[in-house]
Length: 231
Length: 231
Image (spheres, each protein chain N blue to C red):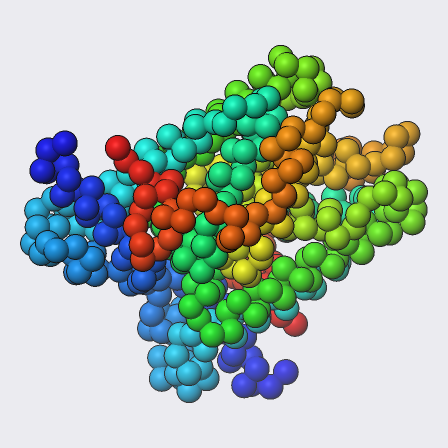
């Protein structure tokens, strides 16, 4: 990797940490520079202001997200689907995740007003939708879901519900794990009668902090390694 | 109504309009005063800064919302439930509603950081949840839904899905009516086999702007009369 690339990655990770601390609205270029050993001038050399930096940051997050959602464990299509939902709605650390989730909501709220934001957010949406739809199609082919199941409809449902989970977590502090398990129940309800409930879904149950094997994850203030990994 | 009360109501309506124009993050007390024939000094006399004004504004919105969600048309419990979802997810005017929806998302994103915001947002959540749960209970009692239906679970589902609809509309411009009709399909899928689909659900279909009989509704820039009515 070039030094140029390393510097930009360092700025992306700094942006992640700065967002956790300051939120989006009040965030300054100085706050981001302060999270690195580089100057604000260096930050301005790389990015043409906050909007430009955030377009890059969203693209950076998107790249990590796109990798994350296609990284399935072994198992049946429905097991993969359940694992995908768990991965996307996985509160590694409640307080810190909440902070980033909240900052990300501010960014979503800015999407109609900032050039390029909505385009990247649409890619998040489209990737997740097509991944879910593909797994539902696989589940139909494997006989786990009935032929009448509409993959696009299930994918739309999952997407809207996931956005709702994030929003309710930020707005009213609703419990992510409870909402997530309801969504998983919806997906298991689609199983053809007599089909076994996938082991991953039957045994995993709601996870707690202690279950986490990826402690160096997406915790705000630590690094941006989980879900936003770039290389 | 006292003059005092009239003035506060005028400021609430001005806040609604100002939010539509400026969004939440950049909104100043001056912007709100500019939407009235009163001075910024008068605004400061009534409210102790932006946070205080917004707590009042959320309470004002909540009051209108609480009235709106209990105002059911005649019909079976499931017809009322479907009508409730339509009312809550009713895009009176796409562009304007989107602007207010987006500003409201900014407010939700601020909830963890501002005293009192989350408490009011929780009342929105709690009212809608209990109204949905009550209607589901009525539907069970009326034999429209099976005894095994869990009112609290349905209510949680509806709430999360509604929040997701608002968020996806703001973040990626997803179509509210399409998402809403999916939610209504979910509610109709719960009908006991052989139960007639309520007329309101079967005939209304996706509504367009031309269908609206409430043209003086929640349009941003017009007034705050629909869904935020106070008296």
